[in-house]
Image (cartoon, rainbow, N blue to C red; front, top):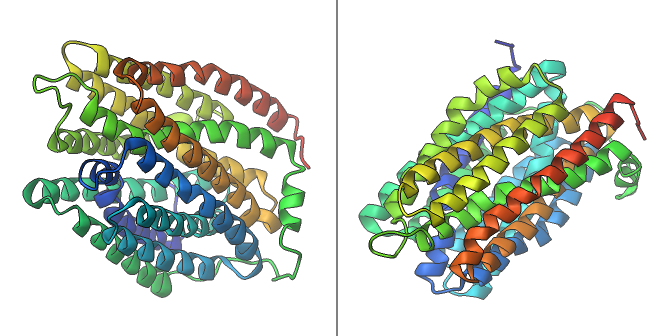
Length: 405
């Protein structure tokens, strides 16, 4: 096993703590706001998507100032903003308050990811970089899994959804303390006073980056469906004897299995994909997505074995995600000049903002149509995967030809 710097392990520990809190809420929030607060699936999807508006601002700020002031100050600020968002959610009782909470959360996430990813890139190189991203993602997934299990137990025993948001806020405060005590500044380049958008102007002349952005947005839309659309789809559109879909306990179990699969397959997948280029690894991820979407349609349309189809589909989604996340992060770090690493990771994170701006409203809109439309929605997503493969083939040619800015 490759040796990693001590700060990578400390960062992974902090991410595990924060993801335990996030696991408490991320899969249960749409159900809570639709079924208990009384909002429509479309309005909840739009509110969740609104986080991407402030997320864009946060990512632009983070990319610039992580390269100018340093990674650590930006990362510390992000944890405080995310904690505030959790406490706003805990007090939310209408759509306006939900939108405010989502906007604050989007800002915090926007600040968080570029600075976080830049720290990992600063401390690693070569094959060790992909391994480091895999370890930090593994910590995310373990924390998320623990949070989902604990959140499901709390909801089934008490129904206290709002307590989940409070615990999530406390977890971000714990992450803040971990960063203060355990992480040193990793920015080595001299701090400069360049104009705000100058780094982005340089980065956007990189054709490889522009092609990567296109495919990355599509892949992020896929991921957003597993977190925002699937819980509602399972609870409302899967045929059961009582005609109400899967219960919260069943949904909790399914997503716990999904997270366990993600955790168990992270390092084996890294070893398997080590035989392939980063672009080919993303193509393999696309293959898992197309199979998983087909299983989701079978979950909603088959007369029997719905749990089997749902479990299989979530397992395939887990493989798609673990093939994608560390590979994409390592690819963007390799494309980036060291002086623009914060900007490149910011653009990578902006792809997630775009994907999450499109994905939740799209999924909510599909679920607000007829049941047949909701079932066919997954087939429509599957039909876009060949487009992803074509774009990746183009990116592979550009990377092989070293078409740099």
